[in-house]
Length: 564
Ligand code: ATP
Ligand code: MG
Image (cartoon, rainbow, N blue to C red; front, side, top):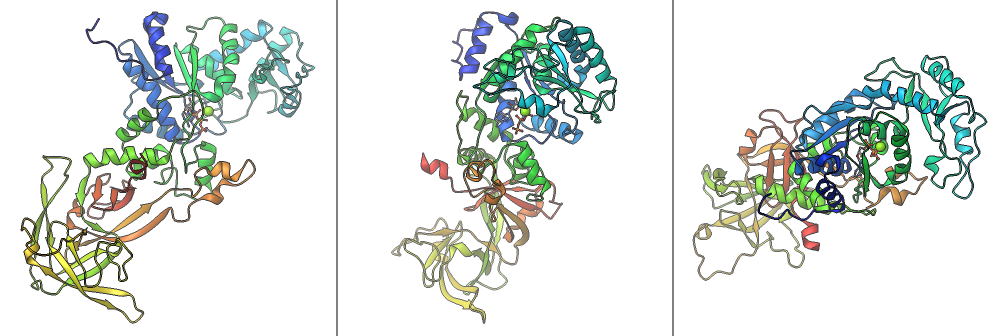
């Protein structure tokens, strides 16, 4: 026993698990699993489940582990591409399943044996009805279902038909295997659910060995039991499936464990669609550039955008677990990302929409090096020299020819501080024939240099960043914004409607920006803060040595912190 009292469990699931451990249930072991279907890429909602399952295993070490199991029971929708990306994503989040990588398809033979066992016990039967007929005869909450005409088939006939289903004698849809439970149960999942169907489909692991495949609701709880899972944690929609899972586990002999299922609310995020089917739709329709488009809520998308595993884990911890459905603000996720990036990002000067500034009283040909702090959050982060010369770029947003009230940056006749350098005054605005601003003529005041105390002059309110024109490098910058304009695109579209009508047409803007020359050394996959602008990440796919491409991870302004 350690001296320090154990911290109180953070949520109701951890509380239940702590009680099980204290009671020495399962000899004090805690074995969880993350069980994705490899039918798409993982998204931020899956991260919640991953952090929960792997997190609980870590917290209960050493008598604990978390499995990664693929529930690969539907060959039509599954692919090795998904199997691989899921493993990469779980690892990126910082978790390790060690040798405990499993596939439900590895249990197909055992699952088939369990089905025969159920048949022999009179607990399953082969039904000749079509899936449509099964559905139509299931009844409703008000009315009991109608038993299938094949429900009372003798055991021997069921055994024979089921083995012939396996042997490939029937076409898809000709026969199904159903559990024989209760056609009038108030729980629709218990009205003789289908547990096997015929699918003449090639499976990414078992090839053509099988032409019957177990249904998810059959394979999932039995796979958990086969693996010795102690706590099956899943999302709320499976609560009504729990009696079926219990029935299966209690009806099959020879299972090594009896998992204990508990449900928690799934993550829903504003401005985000989280169903794999809908995300696949966006990819297929070319509405995004792929599963890893930085606007996608997929783990591969947010990774490419520059979110960090630490920020995602911290977010999952912050939202906690509840038993009721809720909606989380995207701004909270972005807040967690900013908090982490603020600590670790190298600062640079970058001008997204450049306007040229000529300092008419600065000597031609002169270049001075200004020492800028790499990261004010890191005392050992050091400084770097950034060149300054007569011609500069500033951001178009930092100049207003006809200023609105409270605009404290550069205006005609006004003065502003160039960050870490000196103050400049705008003397003239030069325009082209179409009236567009091409250049600002300014003078600088050497007496306002950093460290010099200005005497008897009005205080300059605004400070802006800058880049020396002769030294600036041109880089592609991709400004990403919310993928949807509606906070709840699916709800706004309604059941029948098309949520893609709410895609944000301005979710991607590509700019040619001017950055300080140090960014040429950036390696792909590096985090930067463009001072006063936002956090950026060098695109891991499109950046090349000496030619970085920057994705905006998140803007600097934190609407969440402001709202707090
Ligand atoms: P989707 O609805 O996006 O297609 P799914 O539930 O079908 O997702 P699975 O591959 O079955 O995807 O998910 C694996 C695990 O992740 C499941 O245990 C599921 O409960 C959990 N999960 C899926 N979506 C979320 C979410 N939004 N929040 C929390 N957990 C989730
Ligand atoms: Mg699922």
